[in-house]
Length: 198
Image (cartoon, rainbow, N blue to C red; front, side, top):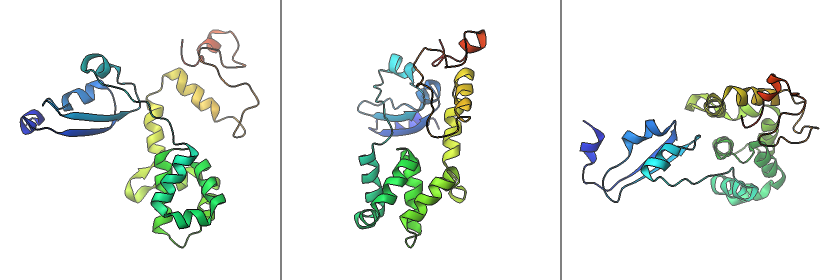
């Protein structure tokens, strides 16, 4: 039975997480007056903004304070306050990503005898392995792969080139939008590596 007939005349709110594009979302939008759809996406969903009057809200990663609040909520104020250095290391290791923080918090909650310092060490030594729970189908690598799959060929190549950097920072100047990648030269190949693509 079509979704429209099931919900006809009902005020509802639909939450659509990780929408691929406007075409995927449009058939799921509620038609009844007073209904609402909230969706998350890695793309701008400009089609919905244009034709359906959707209102975008850009979200950034969590600030250090927000990440601290999240951990305190999930682990308890006392546990977080007992290991402030480890908490800061966990926050830095998760880079403000709510899913990463949630995975680490879940490990800490299910292993209450674990010191947070031990989790911070694990996170530093094997970050992506720590941020996965195969048994529960939660793996931050899968989330990263969805974002990577949506990149243009040039942006994907640039992302792979970042993996060649020997450390957490680069000695080169930061990339600027619309400027060639330093060292790429003015060859056609160098122009292909502009970010974002021209």
